[in-house]
Image (cartoon, rainbow, N blue to C red; front, side, top):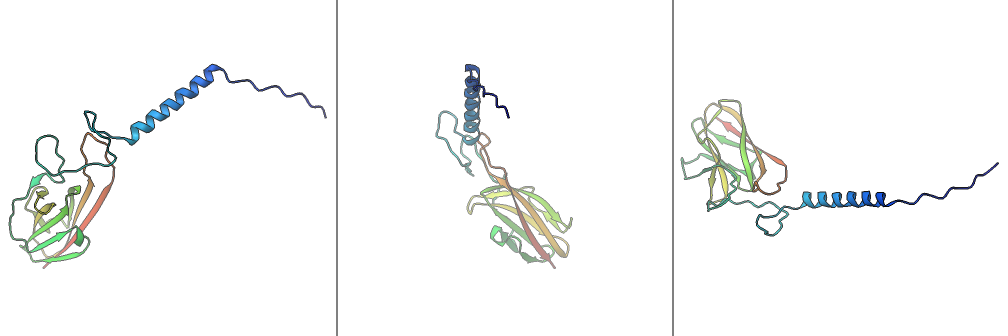
Length: 174
């Protein structure tokens, strides 16, 4: 067996070090840009989105579009804490569904169609108890399922987590 002598390993030239430095700088820039969101005008960096339901001057983020000013006396009121349970109502009764103001809520479905009619075209903010209110009227007997989707409530100029919450209410109409 004949062994040939090992050749010495070539040393890295200045071009290789420059390439590694550029890659490290790009990686540091990407990691910094993805993780931080700051207020404009040199404010403090914040890692969590802020939500507000105030109506003062400047940018305002609200969980629902309208404003609740009281209304019909509801026969049934269901809230987040009563989600996924059955409430009872009679045909013609007014029903209030109240969801917390920590998310942006959207009514995504009423099944079967025609079992309930909406008396408000959108969620209404009740600032007295911090809820978004949907007002419905029971129409036809049977079980009605009302579904909402909640998303993060964020200032549009800041980074925002991407998630969705499903809230379901079942109302037995007699």
